[in-house]
Length: 232
Image (tube, rainbow, N blue to C red; front, side, top):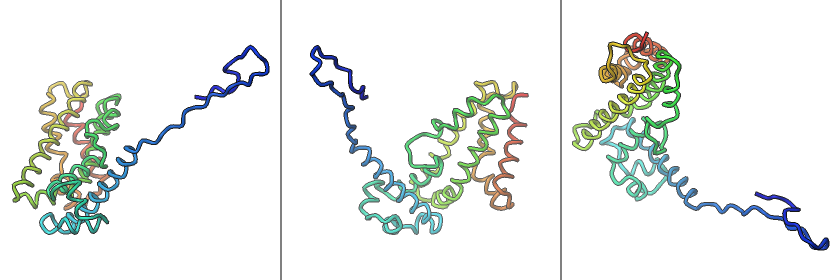
């Protein structure tokens, strides 16, 4: 940082004082490159998501994704390799809410749940975030499930379920560690209950088929889970 004039004292009055200047920061070319790379990745994922939901996995081609994203076909292959990987990225992005490589359990909202003062508040925060995830993933999840006759997509579907259950187990484990679960309930059982209720199937039944709005669904789910899981 600049310290201004007078930093260096001299014996002779006629000698000029010196001014130290802060070094000029040099832009890191990797930052710009990473930003452009993320922008390209985001455009491809957004284009693919719209096409997959509209046409299905099988009918959507890499060429159509590239055209919709405004990139070359070779760019899609360079970034993702295969159409299956594009679908996996679309699903991952719908879960996370963005293309940043940050796992769900490391998101800022998880810390807010850990800091909640009581069981009801913690579950209210957790359900709100979980419903937001399910609402984003529901259309893409249907695409994946419809294409699961393809062995590679079947693996993707199984991986998604396994990862979700693992994440939910860690989140419910946080509630257990904070003393927010009922005394007669272990964390594994509580995580099973959460997994059974917080998913696209229940969301589709009540929001898609029964016509509930998301606010009503969230209120119902919060009340149910507080009743089933929360310490009194």
